[in-house]
Image (cartoon, protein in one colour):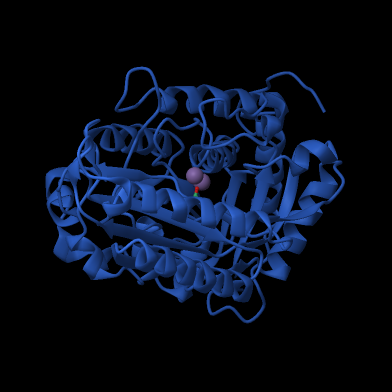
Length: 430
Ligand code: GLV
Ligand code: MN
Ligand code: MN
């Protein structure tokens, strides 16, 4: 599979050079961070803006028209042979979690741009347009609600999120204004089913399955649904030296019992249920004060929607019982609920064909992680290509993709694009 770099008019940039360009850009984008010693790039931060500008530059270098849309997504378009034709949309996200890896999200955006750049170098135009989109908020780190970028594009953005506040008390509305966007025009980011032939995303697997299969790429079957909740327990703050144990209403001890119950419940489930408490804050937060109020988040996922819903209901009952027994007031809100998104069989078939043509065994696997396709499915058929990552590690600075695997992913994506056949009957097909 290895070959040397070959560039020039009418010639594809061959194998390894796609991977090299992708890896170089991953590092360049990964250096744009709020923290000097770790990668954190959350929604509407000034670093997100700097990252957007870099991606816009790469898009324009690939002869795409490019702009920032009304919610902060970076959007590029490479016209087809007939200007104004419907598009095959490729994309992923360019925001990150806190102390993130460099590949989760950016790999899909950067690879798509490299594929377009390759077509452009060869002067190749297709019977449809290609659009590349870098979604501004997939992770939902800042305002608890996820998929804000892709929901805006799908026309399902919920305006009530505009009043959500971040940890510093800044509302999403104010953050948008500070970023230079108009919160009353988010509707302008919405696209229609007629404009999109399909939505296709390349992403790192974020799990160990492809590595165990000794495969660089795989075809995703479905993106598992997820429920996220915000819990607040209120007891009574007091003096750590004087209040007898039996008389305490310690909110943090109550939260600890809830967290233990969630873990135990998910551990004993044999059907792939997972539950995570990833954030907790105790107030007032002093060594010698009994915690009076605690906030924490819950993230729950399962292979089927029914399984997840039943599990969430069970966990909620357990938390209510713990709060009642400990005389703690409980507020529990669902901040995010996404159903499972199946990948379209006709798109999976085209990905499988490309993987086979590149000489790899075709292997299907589900996605336990969430992706923008969960929102895009409201206006387009969706599919995903997974790329192997080292040790299955993700949402961690050790996240890594070998250059050869980034390259394999790019070659598969390029093949899918060049051989893409719209679904019969699509308003924009033919
Ligand atoms: C997105 O990374 C998720 O939480 O699945
Ligand atoms: Mn991601
Ligand atoms: Mn992620």
